[in-house]
Length: 334
Image (cartoon, rainbow, N blue to C red):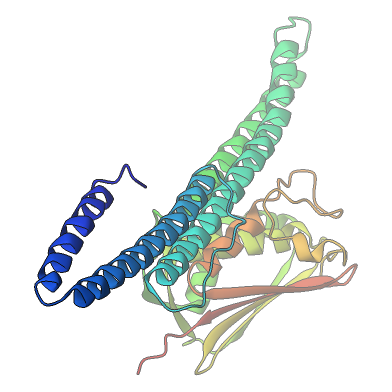
């Protein structure tokens, strides 16, 4: 405390002022001088004790801040008393809580990044290993032409799968990073669903699936056309993959004052009850997932829809099919 220049000045100034005041009082009477001297000493002592107390409190705050810098956010210094120090303690506590939340968020992001890298490595390792084996087999001159064509087709399939996976991960990372600004444009629901069906018409025809669409043709909603179409493609693709040959996929859409809803129902194999809470989790593959599934399509659809103030829910009964409910809420204007 004595290293503080201001304190040293006060300690030098008090005796001088006390002597001056006592000398002035002595001109009146010795009793007045004694009274001024005693009052001055008492005042100086009380003031010095108060300064000492404040320095101890400041020392506690300094120690607390050092612990915060070291990463310890567990201390609670909130003070419900009135005064500048109490206000300062409460403000420091608020900042500490924000730092704690930020630190936890960083740890969660770090954990998610580690998990994502691990998952991506795992997903890429399988096709890479497969292509390496087939490339080695192709170098064997004794393999006939038909077998060579089969290996080439398999390599092409694995490359396409890797391309889709990397492309999907890049899209998800852009959304997570907040670098994508979703457009707000009015879209016709029926037209957008029909556009989303185009890329999967071939597997629909091969499995002889029936597509039923019901709803008022003028049903519309506000959102980003390209990104929403991407989400619908993944949901419809999931329905096609899990619906048996000659099955049915029913698409219903409706609109009310609060939201526009799209319902995609398939007559497929359904989802086991234990898998339902996790189907939107990235890289999660349920017990009924196809061999080609990497568990990212539904996760992408969920991210795109919820990023546009939408909501998606699922109902499923194993062996009887699955239904997805997608809602796009309308903006309420005052």
